[in-house]
Image 1 (cartoon, rainbow, N blue to C red):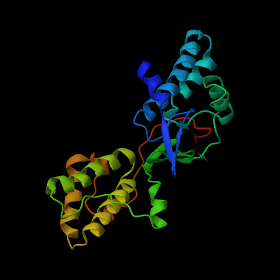
Image 2: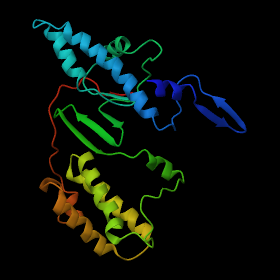
Image 3: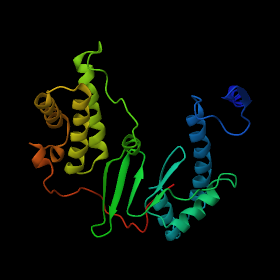
Image 4: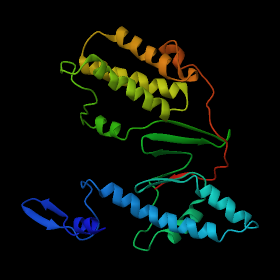
Length: 250
């Protein structure tokens, strides 16, 4: 605790030629900032849940259901995803959970489809099923001219296994984020297309074989495809069934 206090009392930022000591909050660039922010919010949530559970009785059925729905809410530092609770109820709960100096802001997105972290999550009210696909907010920046370096330079001293390992590791991430074969193949095709553009060569067939070999070796059968054309054929979407009045991301 002594070291945390010392750190919080000696935070300095530079603006132009001036150096300022930050008295409220912690700078985003400090190594411990995400940990401290996450721990602070967790303690508020833990204390609130502990109190609610201690007061819960077997006949409090509506309260029990509300806590179960609240258990499906997720948070990554200051990003909240509320998939199952009505917005008014959720705001009432967070007002009790967090202190007055930490109010809940307006949702960045609401509706049947929202973007949360690196996923676009959708709920189909007709089928009561959830689906997800990869989302990258940097794509909008790329469209405006931002250049991203996603791959190691092909002429670098890294081994070929390391260079192609970027593709295979990204395919694993895409498989986790995508709940359907078409969504997975869209992101996979874009991945190796970007890589081909990066290396500026004619290695299309060899890289395509690499992607397919990796998919067959590491992905579940329902996500593998024999060809790019087959990848976009209609298939069913896996998902779980929940009642979904409103999904929102804060």
